[in-house]
Length: 552
Image (cartoon, rainbow, N blue to C red; front, side, top):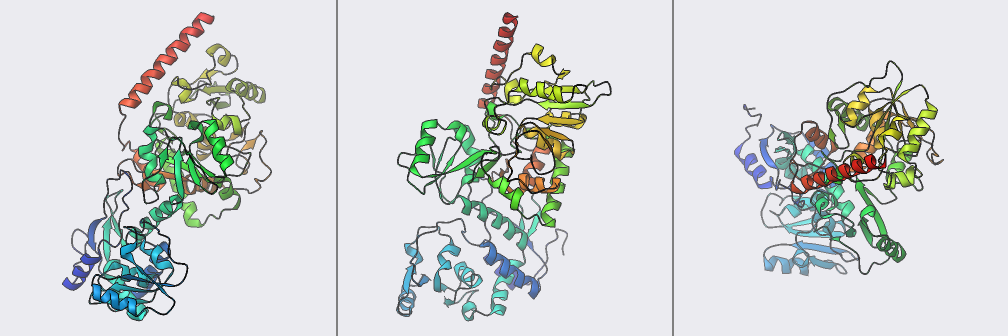
């Protein structure tokens, strides 16, 4: 290996690797800044067992070529897929098609197309021997007739040794991670492409996306992209049964939602994720993570959600739990919360008493109305004081309420009649570190407290209640019977359920990438719209303060 860690291979292997270097590609997500994998050279070599594993894994992931491309409707009967440049060869291929088999020429398909999709039903493929489609056909197990000369001319026999040798120039490639700049082996790059493929395929059937504020669309679009432009719209004029429509319900008119439900369309709920951004949604800071749920939504205990199904029935292998444990460690160590990294911890003046943090919420928020049975912030404080009469209670107003944008403000006099302290400044993560317990209605702060291994009491029914990790005073659904560890809850809520966007590359990413960006303050700063919203919030707070003084 040379000083850069790149092996010096023979010229033939280097040339073949160069020809195939674009087999694994970065999809053109909307707004993304990474158009392709960078090259980090090649590794020294690879043995046959590893090549066999790569053959199986690449076929399982369905990556290579334009895997994000269109998935056209294909014949139901057996067909032969043909892509050859020479007209005479194409005519010859068509003439030798078995009786009863249709011929599908790639020239008739929308470009680019998903090669794995168009090969899935093929009985045979007739492809130029220098075309990556020939390699994909062999990887997919489709009988292949290579035409002419090229690196894949030996794949017509369908034997594993020839497939190994065809894959070898690719398998020794090393790539540059678009997120970290570090080198990736072929297997790691394939897994990353598989991660993107799974996301893209999950979005392909979305026919419309409504209720999405214009300032959210830039970061939401890559996470809802199914290979073509995300169909954002203000309404759906002619909904039909079976349509699948992504909807941000809190931003969609009630009559529109009612009309969609009556049509038989399937509504796919989208909401902010649990690690959202470095600022408030009420300040028009776009989300860097979202929830996409086809069953319900995590904060509504009235019906199952995908998150509840994961927690109730999911499997959590050791590797996933290791990731969850490490992610939790980074979040706690960096003081990260839903709206970014926190500041230094400040201990409340509790005089040695048990210190309880009570986070306020937005009172007209759907999570409070559904999961919290409409419990108001003042009533929550009353219940906490009744439950813990001797405790030192710290009340933390919700940041959107404190910013002047949402409902839920408690007058200081009323609040301090029940609480010992109002924590207006400082981050929620710093407070969580400094208190003994956390009592919540449905606040996400309860989940963030669990990440820090703090005792949590719930009065409503948040998604993390009912799994054996909290003291639950609310009506937890009887269908939540599984007992889960903290690492399992973390894996479900942060690794398996949400989707994340890297604010630097604008590519969908694993949560570890976003957590790292936020913890290091490695992300773009506020824009003009955000500053305007913050000024509006300041004005609303001053008006509220004047009204309170006048009322006295």
